[in-house]
Image (cartoon, one colour):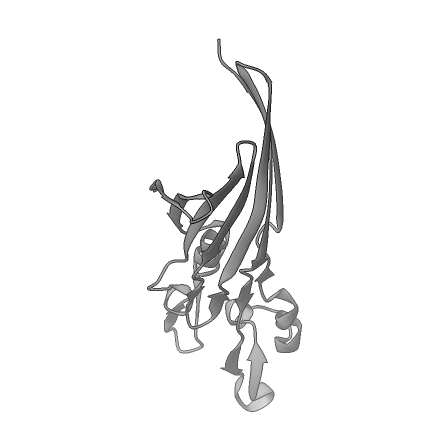
Amino acid sequence: MAFFVSAMTANGQETSLVGIYQGSELTAAANHLGRGGYELSGGTKVSFDKWYHSKWIDMRFEMLTQLSDDFGLLWGASTGQRAEKVRIDPGVKLGFILQKRPTPSTTLSLTVTSILGGNLTERPCTADYGAIGGFQTVNCRLAASQLRPADTLKYMANINPSRLKLDLRFTGKF
């Protein structure tokens, strides 16, 4: 979903809303972590969905402040999202767009953006392994696996968003 709104600043620079978005590649990763489940020793099924499902989906907005006909600053932010066992931190997007017109009917543009923050991190569970293992910290998704509980912690999700994006475009009108 995208909305386009613009406002002039006091010095004549124009700032425009490029878009408002809900969800990201990290939202999809968090949803993927919530798939599946396991069965307790007594036969009770445990779904991961309740731990990884968030009621609030990460929202992002992006703005463009045009400084000249051929140069602008891109900036924005995201709210992040949180569930019991997974979190996406809020983030800030910064970048620029530079364009040149080699001919009246062609445009060459370079867009560079970077995201600060916005990491996805998974939290562990405490599992009861009975008289033999007792209570241990474990990766929730691997608590019922054949791995030793301590070894499951190596597989906790810790995912960064795409930090740097370069986009080079050449367009022409016929």
